[in-house]
Image (cartoon, rainbow, N blue to C red):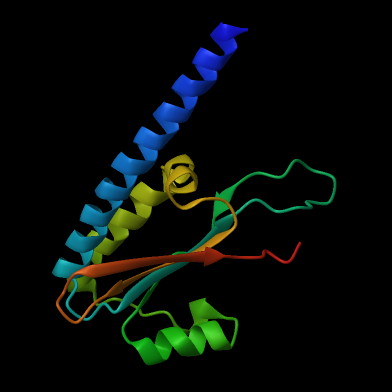
Length: 143
């Protein structure tokens, strides 16, 4: 049985390393996008595993990743329960860094689950000093 404990400990250590390195990498990538997109106020998405899928297996997924140009638009989208409706259509000359990030995130959902957790709402905002702030909160898919 000591081998099981060793493997369990190794797995835990690897997950912690992925979480730590992933947080650092994602913070750098988000900071770069905010630096290259002056009008960007927030990036927001939800992620999780549904509890029910009409008899089919339930899998973790990342949902629509939206950009917002102001706190007002972000708050309005959250309050009305339709964040996509109030999302910012980033000007084409500023959109490439954001679109590249969205593609990378979509290709790395497992890392997002390790870093931020299951059934979470994630918001990255620009602070007044230009740095970013990451907030997560528990999120209920509703099913």
